[in-house]
Length: 124
Image 1: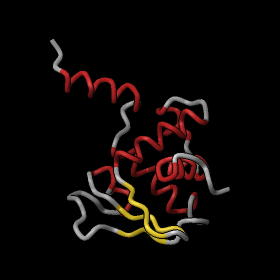
Image 2 (image 1 turned 180 degrees about the vertical axis):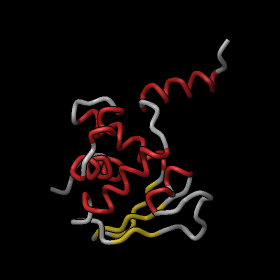
Image 3 (image 1 turned 90 degrees about the horizontal axis):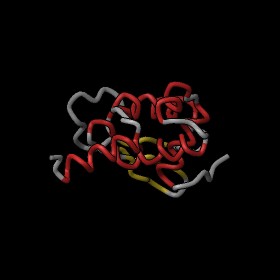
Image 4 (image 1 turned 135 degrees about the horizontal axis):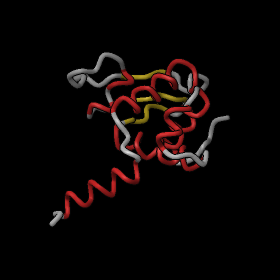
């Protein structure tokens, strides 16, 4: 018999397409290196960076929170909101999460970050 928490984990994995820390990091680095730099003014690290994080893009996948700053101020980015943003972007583009990840580029990575932060595309 599967306990309630295990069942919840299976459902979340099915919905997320098993989004890994590497997927989150790769999508964020694509944003920070070009996809979102027309609206992201700064990326701030937390005071304590999770073990194993080499770059700001690694932090959310490892359980930390970074701050993405736009003209309205800082916005928190953690694993949970990135998972939701990736799922929303994949759905928006009519792709599975795996296909979205394998084919992401600067534009689609930016879409994932915007969905994560705003729940919609608000920039370009």
